[in-house]
Length: 325
Image 1 (cartoon, one colour):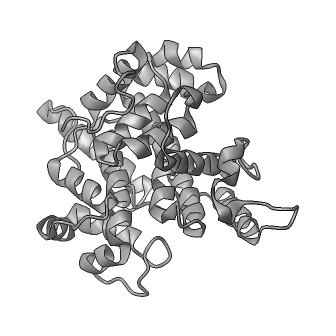
Image 2 (spheres, rainbow, N blue to C red; image 1 turned 180 degrees about the vertical axis):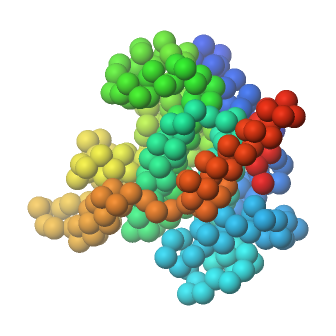
């Protein structure tokens, strides 16, 4: 499916944006039914009941939706005993976020990535959980928005991993994210935030969210752009996630720091919401996220064994990138 509502259309002709777009379009093919569910769920439109039934009845859909909807993870119901219960418990927007994350991770694993995919996926789900904690305390972000903003940068890294395995290893394992952007451009021909913006659009989240993610994770000069309040909201959410995940009390960007009333510190008075978030985020980072609903199997060891089996089967049949089930 073609990328929808192109972000910064005047920039797509620039070599780095064009390169990022080609990477996403070559690696992320989103089935129509997935795109429709994400688009409708995120847009608060009525969901196609036949598509929901399809998800509930397949082993893939029932598995990750059921896992994500458990009360101690993302669900709102006290008891979840079926995929149908899980879908109702999550609701349209949260279901869209969970579906997008799971489908993207499965797509990455189809390309048999190098072993450091596990490190990247663990970092990803930790950021996703941190984002969900922040979103749960800030209605303008929401749990689902926190998930997607936490997911935005690491999934872009994952697509760079499968597009440039050798270059990525040199960059990522060598502390590349702390190096000048010229190093990233030299390795990949584009930057992570550019890939991220196109991934989000390809999945069906639209240009405003993609713009916000790009502004929050990359060096776009916003003063040269007309930025909507919607994009500012997602930019601020991304910057808050980055700040708390990085052990900082708040973002350095003043606009982001003041954007959400729940997170403001006024007159030197303690902010109880922030204090709770510091504790929750610290606990996630101390223990690491235990969530595994983004994986095709119940845990990392099971997923690695599964990938080994797929690799062996692919070698025998000379098939590259078999479909995960």
